[in-house]
Amino acid sequence: MVAAIRVHKNGGPEVLTLDDIEVPAPGQGQIKLKQHAIGVNFIDTYFRGGLYPSPVGMPFVAGNEGAGEVTAVGPGVTDIKVGDRVAYVVALGGYAAERVMPAERAVKLPDNISYEQAAAMMLKGMTAQYLLNRTFKVKKGDIVLVHAAAGGVGLILCQWANHLGATVIGTVGSKDKGELAKKNGAHHIILYRDEDFAARVKEITSGKLCDVVYDGIGNDTFPKSLDCIRPLGMFVSFGSASGPVKAFDINLLQGKGSLFATRPTLNHYAAKREDLVAIAGDLFSVVGSGAVKIPASHTYALKDAAQAHKDLEARKTTGSVILVP
View 1 (tube, rainbow, N blue to C red):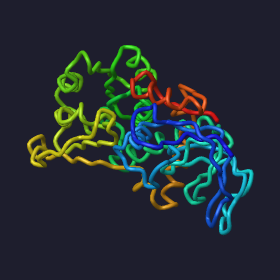
View 2: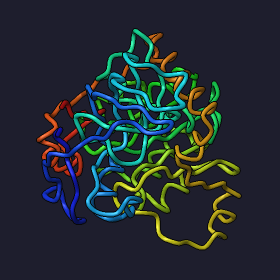
View 3: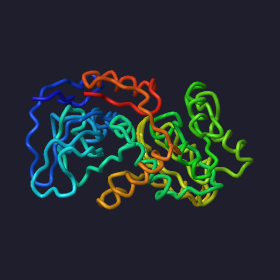
View 4: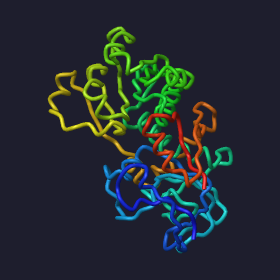
């Protein structure tokens, strides 16, 4: 039996319960991991609260990313062996001391990436990779707006977009978070609680507006985000921290400048194993080079997962949050 955090019913952080569970031997195409670090993400709160339904019913082990050592491999697994250091993003099952998962969704860690760093960056870092390189291919000279610039994905987007040669504008909720975003590559900071962010974007860009807006907030920043985008630019909604963007008249995009709008997810961009490996490889490369730094800003014991969720939802955290079994 091993420790795990399970959800028996949807609700607030208090529904996260510490249970002892039995972890089976790996089956066909599966591996078993001893987990060293587990990532905490906003998507975990969506499953916990019921915004996203659990694909495995109730109860379920929360968590969608982690990193650990392979302790057993099932039949048919050829490219991963016992003792390998791996990391992953897989829907549910993450908040546990040990777990079984499909081998095809695990990627081997380079020696220069720690378990803690991997758990802090797999979901957030791979999200940043496809957002910047595939959803909208950011290039030198582009102007990029990042909402929640001091958040887990936000800090990575700021660093990486800066590295690609873009001018980065970040919105944050406090001066402290603004300083953090600036240290991580944002050129301009907007305090969204005190300022009209669309008006400030227009001012900062001398009316040019942005090529792309990356929005992980959702309801609170839409549709005003569209006023920040130049004609033919793109609105990328990749999260719903304040609730999802509600249905809207698609003609709004035409009226704002024939804009493009998309709601992407890593599941689709990394559906094929070769794409997963390529996305992770690019992430490991840019982090390994030092161009993008991803520390685990907040570390909690596995048993304190509920507190981690409370702090995340109260906007008390910045950067990446991990659990340690």
